Length: 352
Image (cartoon, rainbow, N blue to C red; front, side):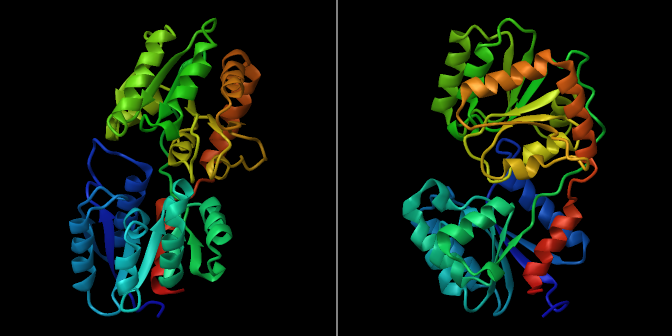
């Protein structure tokens, strides 16, 4: 099969390029399509409408029609947000098509009731590609999948000019939609205990994914007296996002759960150290410099006191800042590239 398959039908949730809804999964899918095309693949994108991963009946019917129209043995790379939410539809075409499922986050991580159908669907497709070693390990442990079925293709990173930042290290950046999963409530509580220090924090990310939670967070900010020190920009992309990274000294990621954490490598690609929770694939994304030095700090998830201590240490210890900056600059040179990511996915598509 190697070398014979050069066309792929990529099935993704609608809104992949919507600037109001940026996400790590969307960025991964877009770059993957771009890199596969650049390496000679004929890439056919098929956005599917629906509130994935909670589709309505017509959404499932439309997906079934789409897959049904593909020729026998066609290669279909299906985003896991779609595939795991439509296990019966995927199963109905798994024997006729070469279905490869790209799993960013198994739905069963958050919803145990989804585990049996998701496990059956993943066991029946041609191959599974995960975006982190942590996710692969989770699937193998929880779903008892054939290890030979499941590949890893971690996200690439575009090395960018080193961030300018500030001399004092006081510019904090948090990137992620304002949702309970991303832990903005933990961030606000941690920063509330640092009123004696000089710092500013910019939170980049959608306020519309969970509007009620976002409203509570902004109320919490006012109640903590942090209105002048903690800003919410909404989602940023392109040059605006680049400018936010360039102005920062450190990325703070207080997530309750991350399967990888692309914002971690996006920060490291600019030489920015990272303070993050030790959850899921975050330690994998952070990695270490070639000399073994950590390019940031990891704290237990949902531990406000530990997060506050880590940020305080960053703000008050010049030696810590210097060490983690050097490690981040070295780690920047070892990050995987997007062409490397596409090569790994291509091997799964071709059955190599």
